[in-house]
Image (cartoon, rainbow, N blue to C red; front, side, top):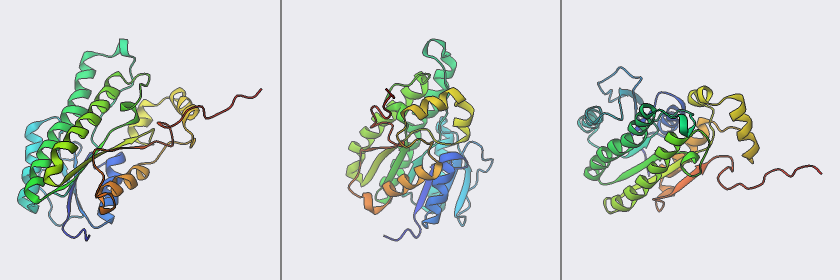
Length: 250
């Protein structure tokens, strides 16, 4: 199927995984709105291959402004890749309520808000694809991820509910769950000790790249995945499926 005139929103689209996804979809011929809190632009450039637009995913008014602009300018929405998120490594007993609430607001409430608004426009457009960026921290308990892991686990369940309820409108919903990825957020939150801990459990023995995630997203957005919905695709160097990966020397 031709991607001519197909429209995508990529949240968090100006950095990290979101930026890589935006570039990949644009390279595939899709017009991309890179919705990001770092943007200062609140008017949509209809001609741009990647058009930045300011979005605070935790703010219903901001989400409504984005979706309204997309409907006015393009009249349709075909893809939503929800990559915007925040995290902080903090021990459970040391996690501040304020930090927990903020992470929930951005990661979980934001997924609900942008997903609901996007799906409503997709229903008018005749269908679409939603890919939420989760995390392997939402699949398995990890030290220091009380808030982040809880929200990503909830994003997975929310996405499964969305997949079941939205299938009748021709909307597919899936989750990509990255393992450790070389981004600005991981550079900030992953100490040398954390990186060493990851290497002990990663069969592929490396951090992933944003491009690794973009490739998986592109597949889920494509017609090759037309019968895939409600699925969680771990892109994690083998972490989620791993057991013992090294045999101790005698």
